[in-house]
Length: 115
Image (cartoon, rainbow, N blue to C red):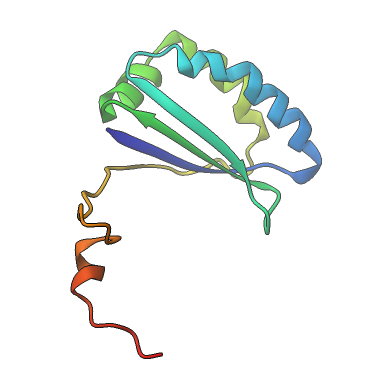
């Protein structure tokens, strides 16, 4: 599983138009092989910033599959004109965490914080 992360800069006065366009574009990405899920969140402190997280089966599903598909052109046409500047997109792999309820193994090994 791979998580695509993009901070999408959208002028706050264009937020409603962007959200409508995203609603129209969502079925495009959801139909792609390897797509698992997505979430779109709007910044509270920075209302012109949206956080897009897309979960893919593997990196190639996004980079080669989606971006190399004819459907990607429609996605671009609907959304890319909203971004200024164009967002950086990064990919993340989940980190296995301890199963004993701790947040992670490093935190479990750390000494307690003074109170």
